[in-house]
Figure 1 (cartoon, helix red, strand yellow):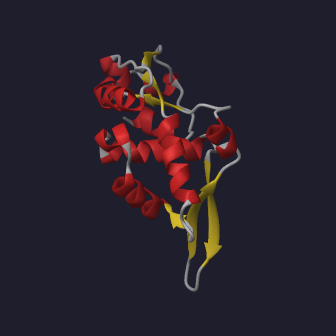
Figure 2: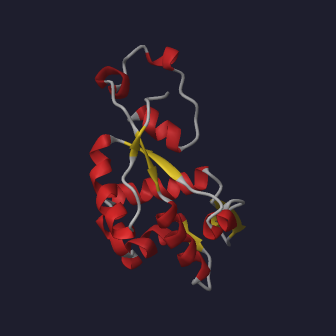
Length: 154
């Protein structure tokens, strides 16, 4: 789990540092690559339709309540991973605003948002095999292909 969380946050994890002590290496877990472009477009659509800026938590809550098609089948923890991946791949970015007593972080279009909306760019997410079943149902609802396997990488 540590490797996966680090990867989603964009941190590098060297296998030499692990010494087969993490659950991923110990259990020889293989990740699959899942296309999340449809979910990215849903999220960008939410940002388009809002007159006010949304924090990460507000965006997540809004997406949970307005999900379309197969995205309704995704677990809340998977929804969080999707948004984190969009931040990591610069489809979304954080915009900070100073408040009266603290700074707030809002989600806004990132540098790759327009390319995702136009179809010029796809967004993928490395997922655990146990999560793949959720995406197979989503893919059927969105009429896209099922996830493809990829070799494990650290």
